[in-house]
Image (tube, rainbow over all chains, first blue to last red; front, side, top):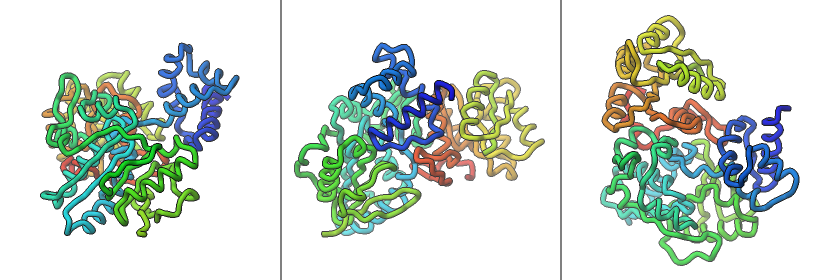
Length: 274
Length: 144
């Protein structure tokens, strides 16, 4: 085995053990790209040195940074493509039909990072659902980090961030140049509200949402916290509302409050009606 | 997947070819638009062309226009990969028939994201479902 292959095998085992994340065998190309900055931050000369340190002794802080670096992918628009297809084809049409009399729709991006997920939803609604004209649409993004929330509110992104999965047609339509970077047009920013929020603490009273996006968050929690968060999310969903999780996450075995529905290669979880 | 990489920089062609090879693509290269057109005429039609804008002999935009005049090449997905990042240029390329646009510099992951949008690469979970059509996708032109 080459040293890269050895490192990669070790890393896959570590991710599986610590975070129950099964990293595909074809993801070796991520190793250097994701871990080199972590190694540099810790004053280590290479990714191999970083992994050697973990091989010698378990170190929770370093492990967490490695796991985060390998799993966090927060800068991508329409992240993973399929969940947005599920929204477009099934989830949104279903909720819009259901709320036709009230003409209200509420969507929550519950770990919004710098805002790409919520802005992606806003673009999808704008371009794909003209029937929402005249509706009251609430788009809420929250994150634990106030720095992220501030970034999301500003809606400013570098060229490299824009490159991550944003369709060129959406760039031209929903952004404007901002120095060397790009900024979400005011018209779209106005529709999105961002705030700090700790998912692991009891949730305050909020509106009930038609859709909650809670993707790639549960992986960081223990089972007890996962169960609590899933129960709170169900109570926060409108009857028949949808919870969207990351592709490796599921409420299975934690709560029976959701009905899985498969759409466009994605499983979404519909809150069971009480 | 079969792909054609069109760029006058040998380094850029090699970076793109290697990235595509990671996805298991079979890659051909051309150093300008005119060479690319003759490659398309001579061989089997690839699934994807990655095309630079500024090249000698025939630039990328002219290549896109020429390729789109040939109905038998309709199934060819074209993505511009260029340093030209002004919105009016992006809009011109899309109007001429490019499906997507990637501004240099970019990371391998950004390239994979775009290919995933085009239904030409699997998503992070390893599944692969072509035909994704997201915000703004309807207007992307090119008769796809």
